[in-house]
Amino acid sequence: MTTTDDAPDAHPRFAAALRDMGLDDLNGRVRRFPEATRTAAEAAAAIGCELSQICKSLIFAADGVPVLVLMDGASRVDVDRVRAELGAQKVTRAKADVVRETTGYAIGGVPPFGHRTRTRVLADRSLLAHETVWAAAGTPYTVFPMAPRDLVTHAGATLVDVREHARR
Image (cartoon, rainbow, N blue to C red):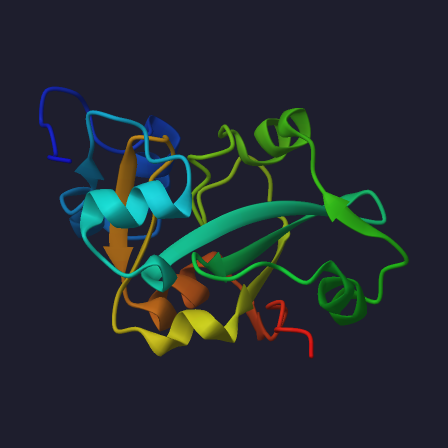
């Protein structure tokens, strides 16, 4: 896939968040694709990077309270680990309407920060395996690069191990 410059890059809310956080230079590094990159695999193919270099921003409901989990694109979230990390009774994937209501973005375009409401954020340590990771910039067509430690810091995330490990 090639990038296109015929439309604005980042979602306006995300672009405003970048400005508010003093990260204006990142807006110039947002890449827009002519076709949606809603999945980590689609994004990795479009960018030309490893699947694990994609940062997925996933909303879960922990005892009914939204929580954001940042996970590398090659891994799955272990909800039991999230539940234990949060001390919650029940953790489930949030429904699309809850994701949009909480973040202000549709599934497939949720960035790691710049959300409508503040939520607790967990970031899996697997993201730190790379020098650069790519995350959604508020739309299914846009992504941006960032050093993982900077991403974790700007997202206000707690580093955890909530990745699903292979069962023996």
